[in-house]
Image (tube, rainbow, N blue to C red):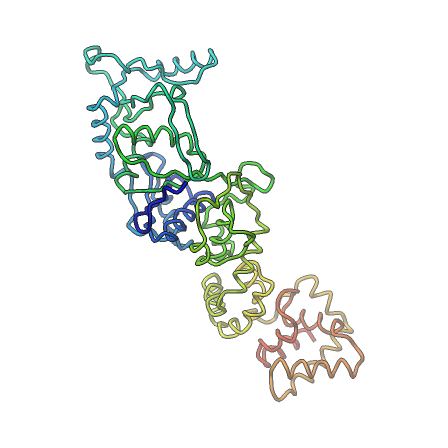
Length: 466
């Protein structure tokens, strides 16, 4: 399968319908198109397929644009809105009528339904039976509505050389004459897609394999118009971890939900790429590596499985690689009241991100920095402050209050000296200190917690509990 145009001649597109959020499957399709175009130095385009005006909403369009922006999948041109090209689609349908590749059908919806029911009862494919296919124009009833149907080949087969699925053959007698224009004169999806892909000079159509049956029908329209047929690559769908079709219970949420759950866009790109595509045993990689490595022949033929645990692990890896100041900015954007503690949060970030799997984990780990006195203690923290521990905290408070310098090194040295003198272990004082300083079991090691707080703040928090 080496019929790939070279370099900047390659054009891919992502063509979502704006009837809801940008879901995981759509985001992966967009990523594969973007990565393929970037790998070859070509163009990646975005088309909003909004011909269903009743179901298309501005909110859904904005959700798609926002999701694409957050994922970093910028198109190389302004989005194309399919409904704005309706006149062009109608003109092409008229061209097919003029060349004998389409015809007007005056059957009512009830008549077509009856045809399909008769075929079903006979165990045949449920389809339109071609009543008006070869009738002369003189038979056309005057003034009655009609649809324009494509005059599909009835013999032989249509062959698609799919870059993922391999050779796909469909017998032409299994396909009926699809509708190009509805009775109200509006174009159908099947016609609009072909015309727009041609007019946008799309060379590669990379999409879910639920569109595979559409490819043969669309190829026939291309042939009738004497237009070059793009290269198809139909990627298997995403399933849940249990192997069932992906649904909301598996994590089939909008991209915006994953952003709000604290995932990084580079981690989402990494994880989505691994859903159906692979580069050896590499699980974690940068976006630059994805672009460098990406090819259609590395896309598998089997459905991939969405696994939240793997996504969490990949996100944790990218968090650890991320710039501390940038992570701090992301946390402050999520929780603006962290801004007053930006300096200490940035200092704490190398510690916070070691165990974090999401931005929310960073928020939870760094919460002690912005906590207001007196701290609200959870149940575990309250139990840690038994009378014996409180007595020890009084001694610790006195010793820390006299420290001439406030650093992790000096704090740890003083506390270890206290433990040695009193023959106690860190656990016998550390849990109480954490309870007083943090109010829960979250956050970095206790010496780091003390050092990240000012001496005045740390002593005040301990004093609140003694």
